[in-house]
Image (cartoon, rainbow, N blue to C red; front, side, top):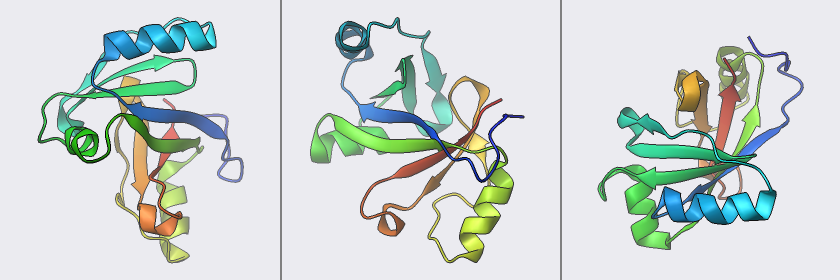
Length: 135
């Protein structure tokens, strides 16, 4: 369980959709001065993921995936902003009770074994928001 309480939702990371993890990770290593993580493949979400500091790079496994369609429509760029929460299940209940439109009503598997859920962009001024419970 994370040490972050439900009341302390700090910025966890920003995610950027890219065509190539290799090319993009090299650029972000230069920009941040940090080294990239290993690659994590999330088959069920259709992406390969690399973290460079607090930047998550998302490369689609195929054009017909969510990130693949995002790249086709918008090109590379900001995909979502993520906030860390201590109890994701409780946070989803709290947001649902407040009438916030959710994409996920239950946590799902995220990169590197964390649990994640997404808030619909219509509830956040057009920005896809991810909630992360670190494991």
